[in-house]
Amino acid sequence: MPQPRRRLRILILTHHYPPEIGAPQTRLSETAAFLRSHGHDVRVLAAFPSYPTGQIPPAYRGRALCSEAIYGIPIYRTWTYARPGASALGRLLNQLSFTLSAPLALPWVGNRDVILVESPPLFLGATGLLLGRLLGAPTILHVSDLWPAVAIQLGALRHRAAVGAATAFERAVYRLSRGLVVVTEAWVAELVGRGVPAHKIRLVTNGVDTDLLDPRVAVGERQAVRAGLGLGDEIVVICLGTVSQVYDYAAILHAAHRLRHRSDIRFLIVGDGSGKPAVERLVDQLALANVRLLPAQPHERVPNLLAAADISAVALQPIPFTRGQLPVRVLEAMAMALPVILAGSGEAQRLVAGVGAGTAVGSKDVEGLAQAIERLAADPQTRRQMGARGRRAVESRFSRATVAGRIERALYAAVRPMPGD
Image (cartoon, rainbow, N blue to C red; front, side, top):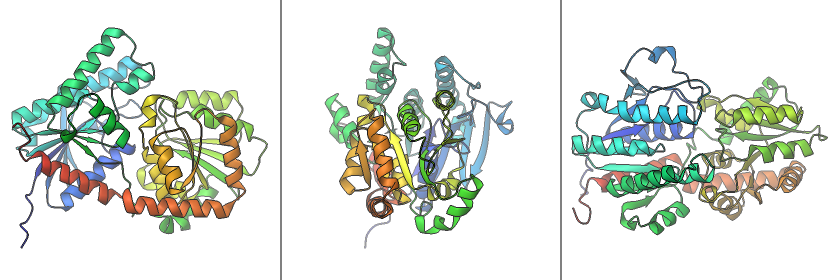
C-alpha cells in the first residue's frame, strides 16, 4: 500500500494578502486553502494591508503586529510604511519596511518545515532566507515577476550603481534559496541562461479557480450586472486587473477613441494601481464617452463582471519582460469563455493563438486592435467558439487545483536533500 504523505508545516511569506484585492493575493490565498485542505499546517506572514490605496485600514492601525484567521488559516501581520499616492520612493519604503518588520512575528510562526516566499518584492527573499536559517527550514522563492528586470526595462531603475546592486542582490537570493518556482517557460529559460542551476527551478504556471470562474454559473448575472452599469445590448470590451505600467492602457484607450462612433461598442476598465491616474487623464483628454472606469472589485465579483462582457482586451508594453508574461487576467477571461484580443507578443500571445482562444495583434498596433474588436463585435459565433476553446484549455492546464498541486510537490521536493547538501 502507498505510504501516506508527510504533513508539512508551511509558512507563506508575502507582502500582499487578502483583504487586499489583486491576482497575487487571490492566488496565494487559494493556494493556502488548497494546502490546508490536503492536511498541511499552513500559516501566513504578511504586511498590514495597504494596496492599492496606500492606506492601512483602521482595524490594523496603531499596532506593530497582529494576528487573525482567514478561512481557518492563521495570518500574522507586521507593520509596513504606507502613504496614499506614494512615489517610487514611497513604494520602496513600503516594501523595505515589511522586509525589516516581518521577523518580529517569528515567535508566533512556530516551527516550520518549509517557507514559500512570494517575489516580488525580491527584498522579501532576504527575510525568507533569514527566517529559514532561524527555523532550520528551506526557502522556496515563488517568482511571479522578474525583478529587477521589469524595473530596469520600465525605466524605474536607472542609476548604474543601483542596477548593479539590485542585480547582485537578485543573484544572491536565487543562489541561497533551496529552489525557485517560476511561472512561465520563457522565464525558466532566462534564469537558466543567467546561471541558475536547472535542478533548482520548477515551472508552475499561473492558474485560476475554475469553479468560481464558471460561465455556466455566472450567466444568470449578466443582465443584472449590465443593467447596474447602465448597459443595454452593446458589445462590452472589458479590461480587468491591476492597472500597472506593464500594461499598455493607452493603446486600448486610443482604440476606443477610434471606435467612438460605434454606439454599440463600450469599454469597461476595472482596477486600480500605479497607472490608474494616467488612464483617468487620458480618458478625459480624449473625451471618451464610450469608456467606463470602475475601481478594483472584490474577487467574488470578478465572474459576474466578466459574464457581463463580450470581449476581453489585454495590451502589453513592448518590453522584453512582458514577452515572458502569462497574465492571470488572460486566464480569467479564458475561464469565463470570453474571447481574448491580445496586443503583444510572447508567452501570452502563443497561448491565446495556440489554443484558438482569441486573436493577437502587435504591440502598439492601435488600428489593428480597433479592427480586431470590430470583427469580433460583428461575429457572435466566432466569439462563442473562441470562448469555448479558451475554457477547455484552462480546465485542462490552468485550474487552481492543478497549479496548487504542483506547488505542493515543489514544497515536498524542498524538504528532501538537494545535490551537494
